[in-house]
Length: 358
Ligand code: GN1
Ligand code: MG
Image (cartoon, rainbow, N blue to C red; front, side, top):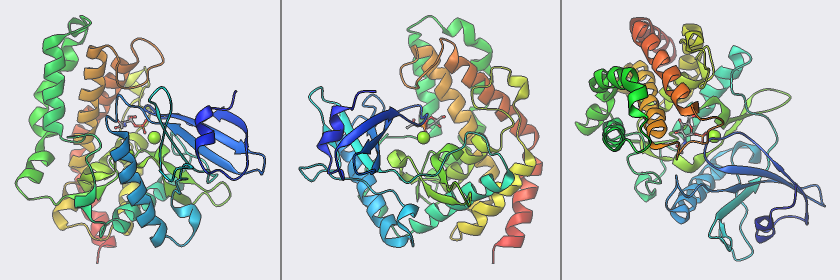
């Protein structure tokens, strides 16, 4: 692959000699760049449709990584962004695209935990992240995607797309709309609790999928958390919940045979343990609503996938025409399974909390 011109804008060690596609996020485009000194970097083009203000986004990411960089013991435990020759953390190219670069740390990411220890490691990583940012000045963060995990607003957006129906797809998804509409009140419980002050706002990651945790190749211990674009004030239960949605599921997010999708209660327990061991500052109420966090984020993502399908696939990268519909159906399946296991989840959280919390 040709060297991406944007690579030359950054203060890299040496001259770029190779450039290859890398990672599999749904939003940004990611490349790995190697230079003639052997230095390796990750170069990313920021998706401007999703992130309307890349300058503010990079202000957030820069502040958070600098803050974390001072707290961690080893350099590999935080991302380190590379400035451009003009001293900025982003480069704007001639086409108006925004780029950024950070030191390649090595390690690997998983879409499905291979062992329960992998999943436990990711729980520690996100729990620690929560803890390390507990004294970060939250008011200095921009909202990179306004109302990102405001489930009430996500429902509003879904209904808006349904009423516009730009691609005449609504007729195909009546059952999905019916189910999601019926769950609206449950899905919005946490948002309401946040509004009436029962749950505190924290600095949260907001995209806590297993594949946003980097694991060490040799020790398989968590190195650091990636993908800081959505670090904003939010709810701890949503961070917990998104990890469960993705990593404690028995099938991948876009498994077409949705019969295969369910919640693995053992993995749920493994993650709960790691998260509660590391995120020590949570209130009792925050702990109590963790299972609801899993359900609410799963329902929310189902509304987002369904909305994007109705809109004609504008937001999430898709590999085939019905991809977003499949994703929505699979999330619905998972949400239904979580609903049937809610008592069990509550019992596990209470039990683990009693063992782990002092
Ligand atoms: C997106 O960028 P990526 O693939 O880590 C999305 C998340 C969704 C996720 C679903 C900024 O995350 O909110 O939960 O896809 N990120 C954004 O896989 O919308
Ligand atoms: Mg990602």
